[in-house]
Image (cartoon, rainbow, N blue to C red; front, side):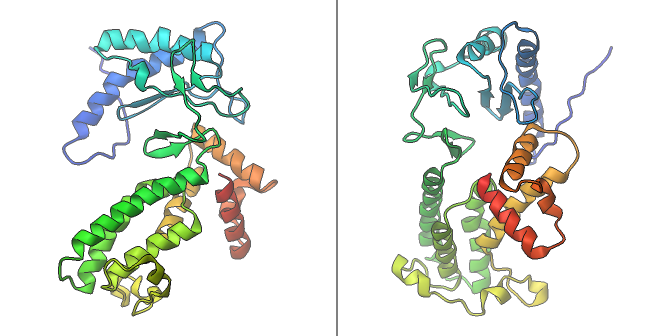
Amino acid sequence: MSRVAIWAQLEAKPGKEKEVEAFLESAQPLAAKCRQVQRDQQGFSSIVMPDNTPAPVCHQHADDTTLHAASPPSLQQLITLAVRPYCRASGGQLNVDKSRGLVMGSHAAINGVEPLTGILFPDTSLDPIRHLGILLSSAGAAQQHVDQLFRERLRTITWRIRHWSRYDLTVIGRCEVAKQILASCLAYHIQFVAPSDNLLQLLHRRILAFIVGKGLLPEQQLPQLKGSPSAAVASLPKSMGGIAQVDIRAHASALQAKVAARLLWPHRQPWKVYMRHAFERCIPGLGVAVLVQQSRHAGTAALQHATSCT
């Protein structure tokens, strides 16, 4: 008897590995059927990526599934020929009322319920779609939506500071709380999208005020805030004489640079095609080569420019 193994890079909490494996096994037939429809169904129209290859037609992350097609009729083919048979076989149910559609690129705008699929396409300039925690619009991750997201995180950080300020912690204790409880709630979102400079500075100063023992300072007093020792010293690891004070500005740059550096890893993946195209569009003739520039100043400036374009 032959056995088929499914390989996946698991980043699950201890004890959850079997649940991740079970989900992958249950979702695999849906992904396979969607690819079959893309390959075999006459008249199916795939989204074309910048390298002129067809984009994947589905993406699954936990219990979120997205379908990608170049037209409503092709989207309806995926629903009819792949999703509904999968639901009948697995006992699942497609909830069209909770489904949302988003039009990107040169396709004509769709506002309201699309008659063929019955899926609502909202005006994302006013009502963005939240996908995997990121607010998306037809213009991508528009800055006003990004700032809306990080203002929610600022409210969460403010509530946590109010809670932890009741305890008489040492500066080392406050550093640990700032790193593990305050700044940690920014780590996921900030590797994909960055808040405006003013909002990032406000987040940084709000956390710094807690670290230096000022608690919840009024916002107008935050710009005058100074730490002792200076941030350059306090941010050093303890082995070098610092206190490992978190700096979310540096942390954000490091997380975003990590994503950009993964472009240099082997294996072809769709997101790499789009990001390479963004680098080429923003830095013609250089593109992702900016990541290995020998000129430190030129490389840094070009990377910041490309990041703003993506």
